[in-house]
Image (cartoon, rainbow, N blue to C red; front, side, top):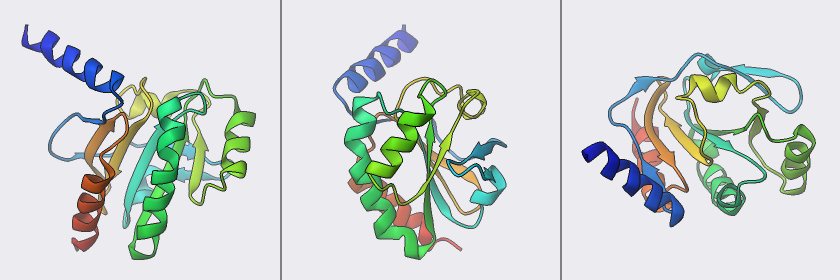
Length: 165
């Protein structure tokens, strides 16, 4: 019964557009290869040394599009302090839409396209967008959000992680 109540609460929160934190503690970010829009590749190991926001999104996701200015503002606020953002477009998102979105919105961070869905699968079988992970400097997932994060709370957590050695 408890499981159904939790699922219902998550569904209700998502329907209301509220980000939900799922999971606790830290786990190693899954080994993945991200194919960026310019054709270059980035691996999970490349995330180490910076606090990184990994955002699974889609151009067809209303919440994703609505939160993107806040994702950009967060990146701009912390990028000079050792923070990075990696936006991972879902496999069902047409690459031309992703490229157009990144160019017209002038996304200042790296954008990857998960053509095969293998990255979403590796990161916990991501199906709902936006799903956002905050990864610490050691390459560990510190927090996972489904839906738009509370950006004020996210900024506090980013500042705490940036202050860590």
